[in-house]
Image 1 (cartoon, rainbow, N blue to C red):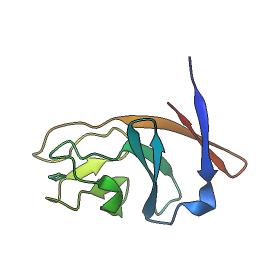
Image 2 (cartoon, protein in one colour):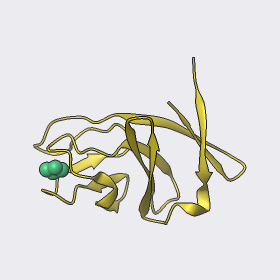
Image 3 (cartoon, rainbow, N blue to C red):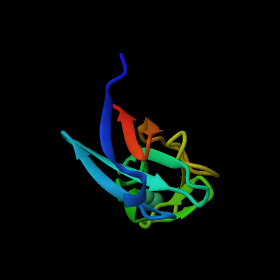
Length: 102
Ligand code: FES
């Protein structure tokens, strides 16, 4: 069953940037892309746990700041020749509030 957690206002996520929220033991990075899409992803790179929230956002991808792996923000998967996956969380916006399905 879906458990939607209220996170924050859309405006609080910087364009082409992220905010980190802690949910229990899980650190989740919420990203806003250039087209104003919102993505929520575990803040651990599937390579060596680099903080994806500190990465560079382009299209629907974040480039990890540690070794430049590209991670698909929708699926959590590494792109190109790299392989691995980190958890993603379904999000929705009601009014201007972001909710995550955790
Ligand atoms: S830790 Fe992210 S690319 Fe190595």
